[in-house]
Image (tube, rainbow, N blue to C red; front, side):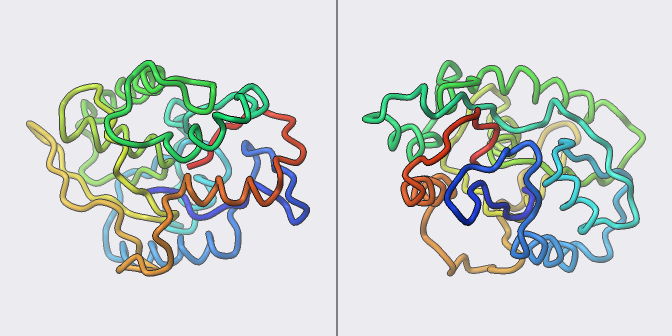
Length: 224
């Protein structure tokens, strides 16, 4: 699943350090809705990326399990937004995950899709090779989930960008001799996805524009 909603800009429009940003009230409600959806499922393990928003989500969704921290499953790491020419900034946000995204494409001037695969696929292989569990909950991030879903469907380092990952959404996969993708982007608090037709990146671009980019002082660790 993806962690619940967070706010990357404060009330004055200034960016908030994404490494420490907590869930919003909405994000906590989304995690609680996911807990209701997954009630009755016995998780042998719960794994989160280790960033506060995934740990907090995991603790709300599966309060009887202590989440493991796997930092190699943290989100794509962007560079300073000021490193991107203003004329290219909207495209960098809105088209970050469109179509089949090449492995050599950087995310907001930072880490490339290929570098994301370099750390996600070995972690995924290590998890699958471990025969000690039957059902595991992964609480991760938008781009990481897209990488896992894309790899499960294609068996390759192919990043399919058109998977939307709403905050707090749940994906259901089985793995044995191969992968079966059973469900994608289940939003327990909005099953019909009525709340918005924006992608997450379009929504973040709109908020960034409203802030006029104020206080762009640090790298973008996650915008999805």
